[in-house]
Image (cartoon, rainbow, N blue to C red; front, side):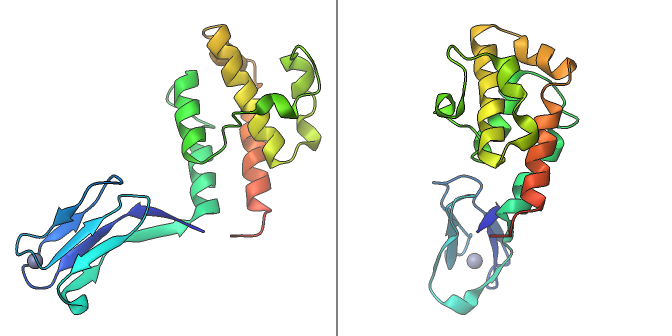
Amino acid sequence: MRKIIKNAIQCKLCGEIIESTYRHEYVECKCGSCAVDGGHDYLRRSFRDKECYTDLSVTVLLTEYKIERLQALLNPTTTLADTFYETLEDIGAIKYHYHDYMTTEPINADEELKRLPSADYDLCCALITMLLREDHFSNGSFGERFENGDVTPIVEKMIDLLKNSTEE
Ligand SMILES: [Zn+2]
């Protein structure tokens, strides 16, 4: 699977470069010969003649994209839960049913974190989601977790597991 980084074409007739940056952004070139749509979700082209444009789209392997985004979390600009949540949601790493992965009831985050060394990718996602949910109930706790070194090993493990996985 590939992730779309840039969804753009250049019209050979009028020379205009047009780009769709979000899902429902339909953009037509100024001479009306071609158009792009789909943002970073799908590459849709409309045209009078298939030969009338040059494709300038950029895609990367989804695994590489995930690794790149996770690496940014090793030296994050902020340690706010929102920053992490946004990135993890973008790469599909939020486990909305993280409870299903837990072994303690009620959840004891420190106990669950001890499972990290043998965790697979899904469990890593569940553990980091758990810490983000903890922040939701106890505002600011995620930043403390980060400072205490609880977060980085999870992100590093996720990167390692992705690097060792077969590319999709
Ligand atoms: Zn044109």
